[in-house]
Image (cartoon, rainbow, N blue to C red; front, side, top):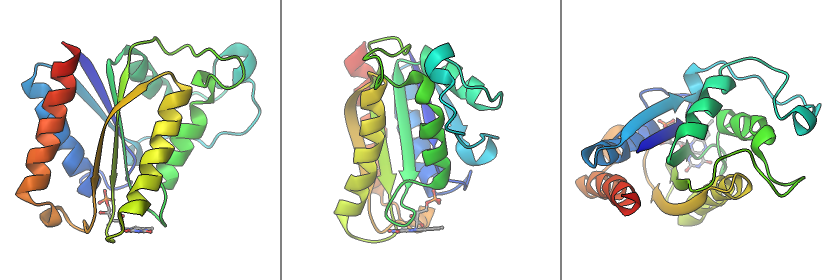
Amino acid sequence: MRAVCIVGSPREQGNTAFIVDQIGAGMREQGAEVICHALGSLSIGFCRGCRTCEQGGRCVQRDDMDRVIADLMDADVVLVASPSYWGDVTGQLKVFIDRCLPLCNAQTDTTPVPPGKVGIAVAIRAGSRKAENQHIIDTIEHYFGHLGIEPVARFTAERIDAISDFTQAHIAQARQLGRTVVSSLE
Ligand SMILES: Cc1cc2nc3c(=O)[nH]c(=O)nc-3n(C[C@H](O)[C@H](O)[C@H](O)COP(=O)(O)O)c2cc1C
């Protein structure tokens, strides 16, 4: 059982990475192999909109997207996480999603992504309104939908501006979520 975690924050040791690590720890407790990609530390170019990938199935750019996509294709669980930036996903995550156009089923109704994967969407923010995190979850689940990934779990937290803002309840919830998703696939 493999999980790939795609962390949308530019802060490699930030709040999003911390809570994703907790979910990952829960998944590992159930025997999953967990790989994390922090988008902020990767070199991923903007989508150029050339749409060459719609013919050849592959982007014309060779950069770190190649290994993230390879890990995504291999994973049983795909976790995508973002902090709120101006009420939305980060620029890093939006660029990543755009670069997944070769995997999108919109034109042909098919995707090269093998079937049977499940998705976990994670959103955190400094402010208190839950609706803002819901918008981020909707964006991530829209992405899952176009790759044929079934959304099975969500984690959101508000009033998070530092790792110390996470409560023991958040941490317990995150770990349990990781355990539950993996055990439901066994
Ligand atoms: C450029 C920028 C924009 C932000 N916009 C919002 C926002 O619109 N709403 C909000 O609640 N928090 C906003 N935040 C705060 C972050 O969502 C919050 O600090 C989060 O915990 C950061 O997670 P990280 O450490 O993983 O990057 C913003 C932070 C930055 C740097």
